[in-house]
View 1 (spheres, helix red, strand yellow):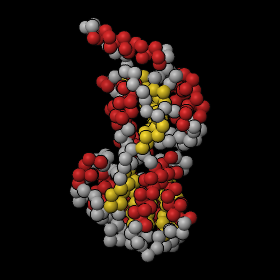
View 2 (cartoon, one colour; view 1 turned 90 degrees about the horizontal axis):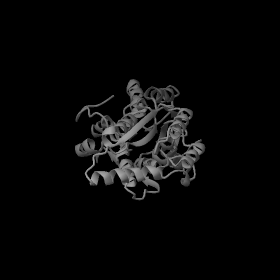
View 3 (tube, one colour; view 1 turned 120 degrees about the vertical axis):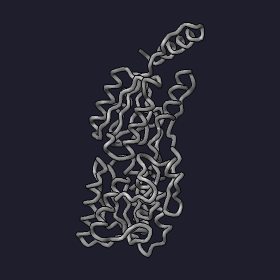
View 4 (tube, helix red, strand yellow; view 1 turned 135 degrees about the horizontal axis):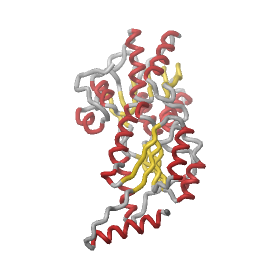
Amino acid sequence: MGFAIKRILTVFVLLLAVTGLVVAAPLIKVGIVNLPPEESGYRQANVEDMNTVFSKANGYDARQTNTGDNSEQIAAAMGYIRDGVDYLLISAANASGWDNVLQSAKKAGVIVFLFDRLIQTDPSNYQAALVSDMATEGEMAVNWLLSQKLPYYNVILIRGQLGSAAELGRSAAVLKARDAGKLKIVADGTGGDSWSLEEARKVVEAAIAAGKDFNVIYAENDGMAQGAVQALDAAGITHGKNGKVKIIGFDFNRFALRNVQAGYWDCDVQCSPRQAAEISSWIKAHQTGKPLPKGIIYQKEMLVDTSTITDEIILKMGINADPGKGVITR
C-alpha cells in the first residue's frame, strides 16, 4: 500500500473520530536498522531510546535490528522495505555500500531517515539525517588539547570501528593536526568493530612495551578511554589533571563525566544518543500533511573538562548510570 493511500486512511480515521465514531488509528510501520547495544554505553542508550519512543503505546508498529555487520544491516533494511514499512531509520555500521538499499526504498515509497551516522551517498537518496557532527566533535577535542600548551604532543590514537562515520569524523581532526606539524601520532590503533575496551587496553599496553613516549590518549569513545587508562594504571603511569598523560574520551557516559570531575580524566566530548523523539515528531507531523525536514540536521553538543564540568551537566546531559559524585570508574 502506497504512503499516499495510508495518509488518506489516517485522515479518514481522524474524521471518524471527530464525528464521534471510535476507530483505532492504524499503527505507523517503522523499521530501525541499528548497531548492537553491546557496542558501547552510547549505543545502549540509543537502542533503549529507539525502543521507548517507537512503541505501540506511541502509535508505532516498529521493529529494530541490531548488528555491527554492514551486510547484515543491509539485508535487514531490504527486508523492512519488502515488508512495506512506512519509514526506515538507519544508523549504518559502515558509511559505504548503501546506495542499492536507499534506491530500493525510494522506489517503494519508503521514507528514509538516517540517525547518529551519515552514509556516503547522494543526499537525494534519503529524506533527512539527524546526526552528531563527528568532525566538529573531533575539532573540539583537538582544539582543547592544543590549548593546553603542553611542551609536546605525542598522541596514542585509538580509533573506533574503521570506516564508520564516527571514526572518520573524530580521526580527521587528529590527522589534520598531525599533518600541520602540531602533534605526533606515536601509536595508531583501534578498538575494532565493537569499540572494545579490551582492544584499546592492548593498544596502550603495546605502546608501553615498545617504549613509546606519549602524553596524550585520544580514545574515540568512553569505553576505549577506560581500557586505555587501565593500561596506564597497571604500568604506574600518571594521568588526568595532575598526571603526565592527558585523557580524552567521547560520548558523555556519566561514569566518564564523573572521572573528568574527579580529575582522573581530562575531558569528554558529548555525542547525544537521543534522536528518537525528534524523528518521531517529524513522522507525526508528516502524518497530518506537514512537510518533512530535508538534508542533514546536526545536534548541538559540547565538550567539558575538569574546569567546566558540573553536577547539572552530568545529570541533564550524561547518559547511562551515574556512579555518583567522587566515584572513579577504573
